[in-house]
Image (cartoon, rainbow, N blue to C red; front, side, top):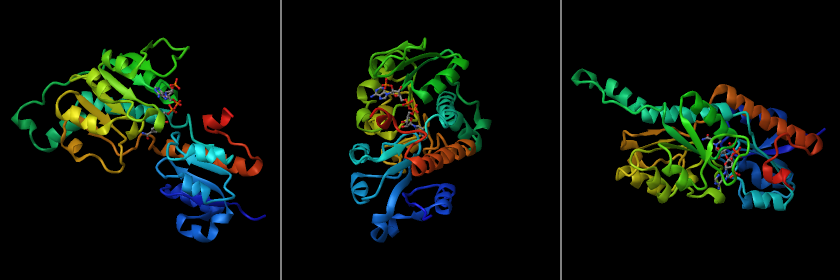
Length: 311
Ligand code: NDP
């Protein structure tokens, strides 16, 4: 039987790239001019763009399997209009991403990175490091109490924090305090963790009004998408002391990070690694390949995106 032709949209991890090559007739973007008519599936990660032009250029495309829970890299309406199936990798990354949120919060509040620099720079003999703020007993708001948001919440409870949240809809089965808007939540907490999907619906959800509501003693943690935060406003708020600090895993124009942020000691910067553990990436890879195999076998997906299930 001939093997299905699958387009690998970069960047893919070497393991995923090779696995697709071993199991399928894999093509890469450079091969496309000659192979457009053969491609039935796309494998991508959430940093590889699958736009309307690419989708339109592949007449036999039937499935897009995304290695990542967020899929704002894909033109979903264009794909659904063609009846193309889309999958993502929910659940398997919740623990790793939630850990990263907690790591960022602790790192900013306890000044872990700045204190490390203090030791490395040989400044300790000149006097002790200044006191820091503890996370225990603080009020933490979560914007996006979904799968990952809940995993963040349980860890915050274990740290002794008071948890509240904002979603568009109140979650029925939790006791956390609900706030009706991002600004209302920000005004009521010391620390704000953002973990909503990216895309048009959440573009600049964290705007100046939210940052100002969080205030000069507040800390923002963003493990969602760079697009969710108005980045120029974030930089300005930090520069002007209107925001106390920030822990960031994601940025508006990755891998470019506003240079001013790199000069601030009250900011901790990660290179979009929230799900980046060996265990989690292996699970995400397996689920991505399972989705592709299932669709090729019988047209089903193990984890279709919600827009597809809702149809
Ligand atoms: P879920 O769909 O389980 O949760 C998303 C939550 O966001 C829901 O509770 C939803 O509630 C809420 N939400 C959606 N839109 C809005 C809005 N406009 N305003 C307020 N709340 C909103 O997703 P996951 O928890 O699995 O993942 C969340 C996101 O985290 C991913 O989409 C991805 O972008 C990001 N992520 C980042 C990673 C990284 O490496 N940094 C790794 C993994 C995920 P409601 O619908 O009621 O509003």
